[in-house]
Length: 397
Image (cartoon, rainbow, N blue to C red; front, top):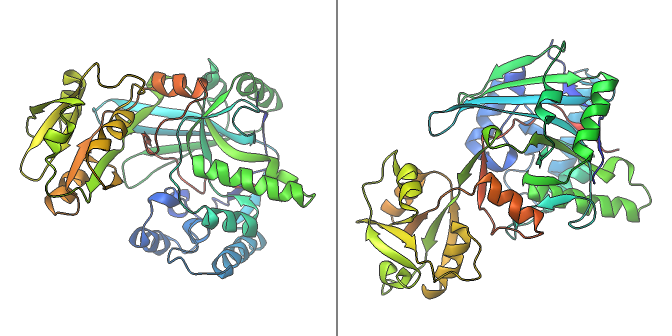
């Protein structure tokens, strides 16, 4: 099972800056406009170093500049170093169905291992995309700037994390999510948390690319004979419980399908195709009740009810079903898209021939697939909301 240890975190001096002004969403959901807005809020927002190369400039200069900025922040006292600690972190929010929820976890240093070696269970394939940006940033800064998100079946972990007499810092973001963070410095509590997490496998919920990049960097440092802190990666561990997690689907846009292809006819061998009701805020409830995916075309929408005999040997996931059924569509591309409204807009504008609305994977499905050593198709799960970057950093020097 993996080791999970406290570490001496680097944190902003909250006597000098407000944490709401210097933290940011994950780098991979930030565009150029978002980055500019965050830096307008505060010039030392973490996005300055977590996304130093938004324009994809060749060479090391943006990453070396990020490292220089971090050095300046430390020299100026904007970043200070703690004694080895765990870090409690909570998000309180309203789920898409209107239910108030909170997700509570603990940030620590999780020992890296490849699948099958040390109890780390990825649940999803990654898309083939360049990891060079993250690896270049890791090489230059030698810091974990954001956490991998892990899930642990350790019962009672949430109770161990809850603040006792620690000072809790609380703030809200622009999406209405309330964030809370606290430092867990007590040695007995640290030992209890480490033992609880270390007794079970950890499922990677989010951050598969970051995890794989950390593995690549660890292997580099081992070859160089100087692994340092690269044997672990900063990870936010959340108890694997339905009430703690909100998993949303990532929908599909179909691009480049031939004009001569009737999508309802092409999908009919796999699905019972029926006219769908109007797409509105109740579409997810309709999908759950009808047991269907939804095909969105410019002029109408269709329920896609899986035929029970059509998917033998296919995982019980909408993403897997659609991957199988797309074989009859001819040459085309798939774009991954969050949000029903964005799917509708891109189909209406002609940017995509059609969209397919999927149902979310369940926590039980995620655990079953990861535990069996299998993986879901890329972009099957979207854990909501996302933790902020910049609450704590970890040195791997």
